[in-house]
Length: 591
Image (cartoon, rainbow, N blue to C red; front, top):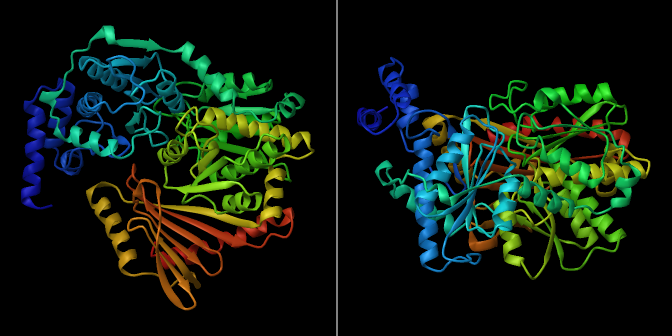
């Protein structure tokens, strides 16, 4: 590191020692400054934790590049300033009366309640009405409450499925979705102006209202509106379900929702019902990692369960485990889950006469093209949006009053089956997958066999995701350089398969090989927004997407690999054939 850079870092750290910070924080800063190894000091102070388009997320600790109550307070002051600015300009559609209002929630993570109360205090000190949840609640319930209470914004303190060292801050707008342009940049600009001296910390207790059970009930009723085929549930009310919240926010509301739908045979993993931000029973609280499902599967085996289901710490993502044709537990990946939801919604709404021409589904650009096949063949509108449910919510906003949203999801184990919330929602997704399993069982199938039937009808492909983690300042620079290299050196083939189409969502340009010539056409995305994503499509049907994560120090690679599957018995062989191509694909990408 350059001498001037280190001097700047030491200066920032000294400001924390000299400033109005608590003794524990100052002791942590002093320890970093006195340490022989300055790497922790550098990472804690080399920048101010960036308030991005979705909010904040970072490792908890002392310093300007860490999640702590001071950084949370500064962010909230900036957000409050922007809310009040929009109010003065008459920019809210939902404002009733003369006071801006917000919802504040948190999940099970360490410091979650402290940060949520800090957020509530700063908002109230700025004259903003706060509805603060009494204890941890799912992310989608925060989204629901914003709409239900006609608020103008909200904050959920969560780091979703990240490791225990992390916490975060999701900022929401009046429609219950995470903020998008122009408001995202407007909030960022205000946050960047704020120093600790600007923060109003003395709360107005009269403006903080605690909410809880009454909102849970209204939310549960909204979740119940997602139900499509009640008769299948009544017929299979004894479907044997094991559920785990992974120590998180779904622990009460999800079993309640399942019972409200009519399911009566619900079991929970007792060790993982304990609220604990250290996540002691798992290596990582991410339901995408199979290890997190181990205890659930063990209980499922003991009880002879049909399904094992999990939600992540803030109860927006899900994981589903079912039995294969050999009776073994298999984890259904996020693309398969999304595919089953869309297939079931289309087919069963048609069977029950509920489908209308104005209805539509949504997927994200890195989610399986199998969903496109299903929607196109069934004559149902499907849109592609950028990664993240705020973009699905944006599509709902654009078509509100014109078309009816009936579901949308992404590959990262998330689905949103209704528009009463505007973020991924595990309570409704879990209830709906149980309905699908009940429907399958009512027709002599397991959930696994139901999935196999979709492949037999539409063809098979295997999705695979590779995460390349590069932490710290040097890691961020390396990821940026990787994306620059891909753009500067276009790939002609991937794993020996000729590239015939490239989509660059940063420049909004698509290049397609037609009659031996590359033809450029514009990519039209809602709001004309861009995203740092590259996609490659090959002659043989391979799709590769490259996307740096917006919330974690990693770059993500998504592979969709076709293979031959002539019967359900070929599933494992087709999977193996597709996965055998992964090393060659990675080699082509230089990872």
